[in-house]
Length: 139
Image (cartoon, rainbow, N blue to C red; front, side, top):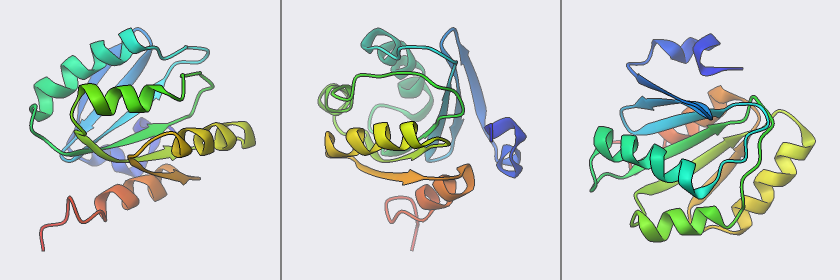
């Protein structure tokens, strides 16, 4: 389910439309929905990070939800590159998968990163997981 079609669309958010996908910035996390057939490469990530840094600030700790409503590719090693360049700004992630192949790809990505990544079967599960993280709960 796309974020725009979910009940969570009512959350206060800011939408960025890029040629390769849509990004929704919410208080402590962002959601990506890549377009069909895209290879999400390092240049695309860097152009997206410009907007992320502008919205959240360089010293923020945020969560990331990859809502894989479309099939696209990404080099699994990209996660470690993002961690190194952006100083562990992304503290946790969730990958929403809708097919067995996407689940297997998410499993590979999970093994190649230090970031806590949860594989989820729905956008609701992913959002609840991110919102429940101790990094974002103010107890």
